[in-house]
Image 1 (cartoon, one colour):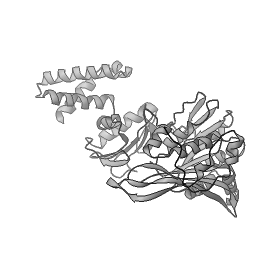
Image 2: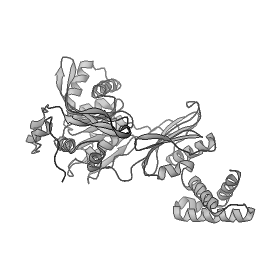
Image 3: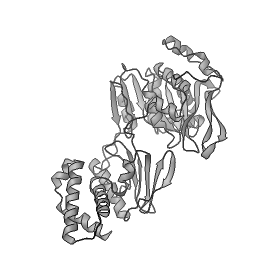
Image 4: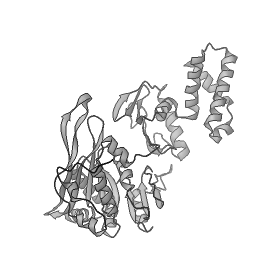
Length: 423
């Protein structure tokens, strides 16, 4: 370790800053190799070829990447990286958490990596600003929190951004949805139903939102609004908006709510909000109720009923003094469909329920389940056995499909329906 630190200091002292600014990995790595070999020869350090190659990789990751976690970020099977402390780094692979053998030297080493991520974005992390959300150049989401808020030292969490976004066929192959569910959701999007996707943390809401948004016709103007831009729509007419946190002086913040309000003046055919989490819920519902049909968003919730309750609470956060009944009527008239997704005990992510919202009954919105997941237990290796099935209820909005020239066979809602053939 002492030799590595000595060589690292030598590199920092001798590497050309202009080469670092160019950001060309191949040239930088070649120069790192030259300097490492030069230092090994000068100091006559007893390193084998294998040790030398390992040293070059470690130092290149330190200078060009994000230190010890760089191999995890390059690993396509890893979806999330969680640094709890210097000697405890977890990752998520195939929906399961696992402890890695990655180690940082100390807390300062973690802080160095955090600073390397946030400094180019004009952000900082210190005692006066101990929490930060950021994004890597590839789109991966980063959250960092440091003492005094984090008791055991700096904590870093990175949710990786997929290089190739999943398609509807991928989700069918993973078992997230069936071909029948895909056909139904495609029809719902084309018919301009307002859809809310609910689920817990890491349940796959954003992935599902991206896939569902792909069903939007190519001739429509789509506005996406996110805290951290993750959605990648392939339609030709997409405008992407991203909120902005306050700067170091605490000024300049642009919230999701600001962007939702502004989007209404941008002539959108569709508004896609990555996640609704505050007062913007009221503006979104009002937009849905005033001609901006076909809006899609996600919300953190443990069930469809929880999603409606959370949405009501968020509307109250807007500062408008509205009675509960008025808020619920807004929700019931604005939303058509609730899609709930869960991460099951085996790590798989599945749509476990799709519910129609049709009006009010007394003082509460009415939810009618159209599809539900039925678990049959655990199979080999702890894999969840079960599937999503129609409940037998036909949605009231089926006539909207017909009016818009969208044909969806009624048998898709039959309890014995197996889905269209994919031959």
